Image (cartoon, rainbow, N blue to C red):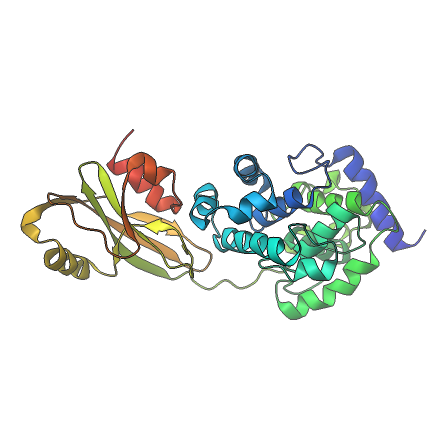
Length: 347
């Protein structure tokens, strides 16, 4: 048996006995359920995704329902999961499927890859799990398994390095049981060949793993030199009038695209000037709340919340709306905004 066949055979055998088999999107061939799960799983752990997936599927059980729903509704059920462009692309792709594909999820790899928010690995996973296609995946878990097993030097997160890995990924594909192999490869990276403290003795590949034999598993893949994470600051104006809070819908582009946030200012001076000219200082009472720190992928955001009780209700402007606590918590809110709502109007 050649080395490549032995690699896939061990993965398949391990998956059958040790892998995950009871996830809510498994044991079915429904491309919609698989699609939603794959999008949610991008940069998010399985344990976090499961409750969101179950709630999402109960409200949007099929492509037609998702496509006909408002973006606000979709974002509300995505709220807290992060990376909101995934939800916007999911909604956009559902609409495209209804128009361009007659409401049926496309079968071919090329058509799947053409949908908004779907990259090569996601398209491959969908093709494999829904249709049994013979396609390779190359997510972070898989790259880590390859890097250690073959002792591949260098940082594998760059586009050039990833391009060089695709031929290897395809060369390792088995001739059959492709879905079991693919799930096994993902599960192995998530539960055994972990980024920190890999459990090598549980791995079916450890006897042939070059990094393990050299005692260097912790060195692969090479760590990218991290730059200091910059910190930004914003002042959030938490305006309250008779139990309602004022929200502004964020433009659809950006980190919080399409979500409802509190009006913001870059500095305290700007916030004070805004309040005095727009509201009038004699019409309100305010207090500064404890700052919040929210971490994004590339920066940290320091949030200074200013809770202001407005005596005379201000008419909302464009893209603004007054909401009660329950209305707000049922809408699409970023995590720190949701925390502030619960803080200023306790249950």
